[in-house]
Length: 256
Image (cartoon, rainbow, N blue to C red; front, side, top):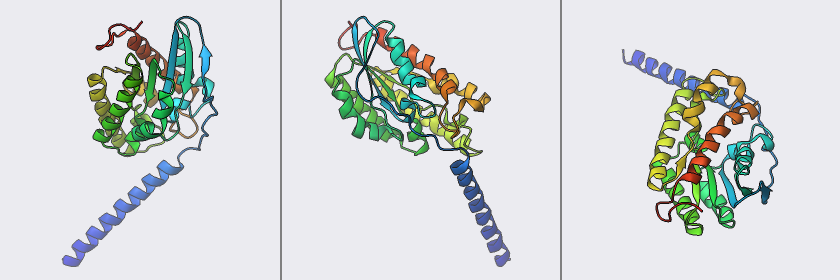
């Protein structure tokens, strides 16, 4: 009887390990790698009107990985702002960034420009890397505090994590885990957003259904959006930017 129980336990463990291996191989090889697009790192000037310095910070989605840079939401949002402002636009985003690396590697560059508006596109990699909510909050608070110290009237928009459970690369039950992680990351970010009077661009809530329904919105790696996918995020981000520019600062009154 003992030997039979041991054999059953060993069989269950082996089946579980085989299942994990199959899931890993699916995630690793389901899709073809897409390169990071070449982007301009210096100032780009767009539009006319009141001057506005706009800085994009964040991960691979901030640079439009999965499409060419001109079809990224960073460029689309800069052009959107340029309809009303003379926009000095800078993108310091880097592929693979989590909240902590945005703090460590991108903040110093952003502060050089004393931005009036910041798009902080972070959360997806924190979701997949299983970063704790507390770690995310600590990093975001430090980023926000530093940006506000450089310009007390800065407006900050946070995208949070997109709906990682909609990613076509992931099999069941990884999708379910990533759905949970998306909610956890965005819940952690929402707390900071409310406390620090930031603006949330809810790309996960607004576009999840579309990505679930249409896998062709993803690039060849089946992880990053393609041009059509990013085009769904852009209006959500543009609306949040408009909202941020209309919200009076609790410390300083309306933005001039």
